[in-house]
Length: 161
Image 1 (cartoon, rainbow, N blue to C red):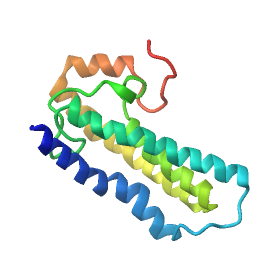
Image 2: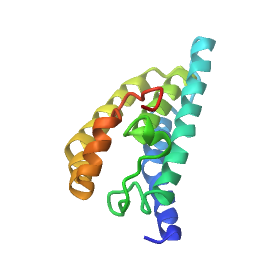
Image 3: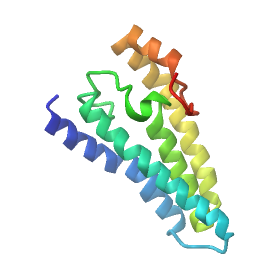
């Protein structure tokens, strides 16, 4: 896939997937209204939202540059993406989206969003387990198996081994 097509596809998918899951739906659920809440937890919420954004944006860029494709199942990468945050966790985009939603719950004092974050985590885990991992195994074979053995799926390791 050409870099320009991959960039355009990734940008569209960014809006449609994490943009909806971590932006539009939380706004629908809460109106992003601030409820009375502890300032320290609001600050933690800001940090989680920023951490999510700091992970997801470069992860999308990596799919274009390293994977030569998009994160979208309709236009998958032609190379296994293992650099950047993918050195520390196999699913940084999903982890980042859940962190961003949980951060919004704390930021806005809308604790109902924590339930939504848990639902997002469950749905993404099911998607990864029953669709994405088998598809990656079929596409990349032993390269993916080696990567899967070396890098944790959901809880990032703090140092590269």
